[in-house]
Image 1 (cartoon, rainbow, N blue to C red):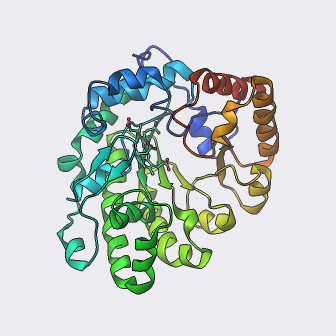
Image 2: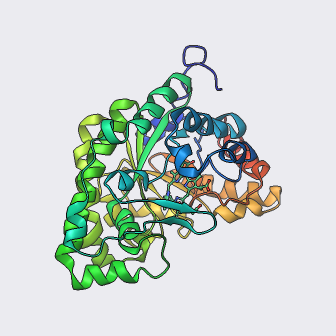
Length: 348
Ligand code: CP3
């Protein structure tokens, strides 16, 4: 267990960077920092299924804290999954070893969609709120809550799981746009309530994961995805909690992502962070080391990290992160080294 709140002063470097305030050094956290690359996670996961883990607050707290202690990152991310609230909408969810998530009853028509409910977060997702409350008693770094963005969530409900080509999703978008928008409406309403509840329970920042936004043409992103993200962020304004919007593979529509209203834009590794900074106004940037470059020899890894910190010097706040989640076969000592280098090279 980490140090108690009253024993150690709060490390608020991450939150300052989110608000584009000056920081003493560059804060870092890592997407998917709690997960399978850590033997300590595997140990907990060895006794329960993934969904059982997600629904047991004491275990979620344990695995959320692991990377804080092991890596020394500057923020914690709630242990859960973007698909958990979709299950609470009433659609069965399964996780299969090696195949990932499966929704055996994908949404095909309006009747399927009508069966989904808008869950009350405290009633149907109380275990997530409980995890947040418990974590706030343990943590000396800020806690990030999260959800999927409506488009990314919709792809799982429509495809029935992960996809490479998104045939069903795009078929619905282009041949049944009203149905697609109705579905986005429902997921958006669910997400607003869910994220508001996380903020109320104690989440100090909220990240919206749009993992599959990059499969859309910019003109479709603008019509089918962006308005819903804008609405969520607008609705969260009075919580006062900074919002991070991560559109994976979204460098080509960075300006549209900025119009989401997020305080922080997450960048994947396909763009130079300095070039990204030139294209946006006063918004903090998060990223953007290629997760696989953690396999580089340590001296080369350090050089790359130094280059990103240097390229990010003109950002209005920089939070170091990978450009996507850490891969499950990454040696933990490489992640530990990366955190150390970010701190050392940015003046901690
Ligand atoms: O440390 C953290 O980041 C917090 C926990 C977290 C998980 N998933 C745990 C998890 C977070 C923030 C997520 C987000 C998530 N989940 C996303 C968006 C981020 C991204 O990577 O693009 C997506 C698309 C999902 C959906 C999901 N969950 C998939 C496709 C899979 C299976 C494939 C895979 O990468 O493993 C999961 C399972 C999952 N979510 C695991 C973990 C630790 C592995 C489950 C296991 O222990 O077997």
